Length: 203
Image (tube, rainbow, N blue to C red; front, side):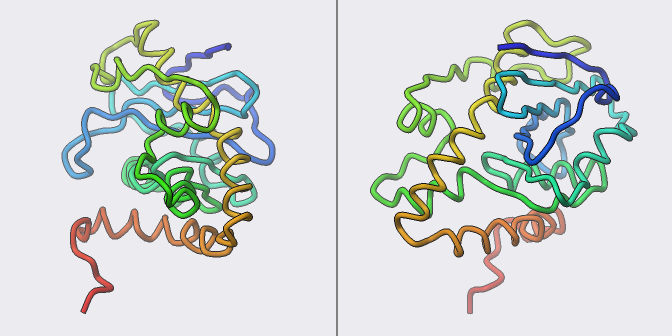
């Protein structure tokens, strides 16, 4: 595993083709209160790129261009939160999205464990550590433990997608999953606009 650490933007030597796994680390889970601190990315090749924002300077032209690229599939786990954070701080609405959590909930109805750690353990035989989940991501520098943790959240998403696609096809739910993925940017926008708890489709 190789972890590349960058401040405020990706270097111009980094490029992704076809798909990219993405995750975010924030100061907390409130879309209104908490800021984005790290975006981590991986091509599924055993390497991770961490873009750290120790201060809220989100100009990041190369990262913005990548996030806005419609032809690039963006893989997330619980995309709803990450997409909202990206919309809020970068003003970018990501298109062509895939969410492993949604895919798991639609295909693995035999269980109620759909967290990233659960999926990696049950589908890949990989045990992820979550010890750094609530550490200070807004610190001036990230510790080695934080970097390793952040990288682990994107390194396995490509392989998980392959396994989950197989299950979605087996259960005949791929079209339904793809429709849900297409709606996720709108779901994130609703969260940001104040409809995070209310079910607008209810009577």
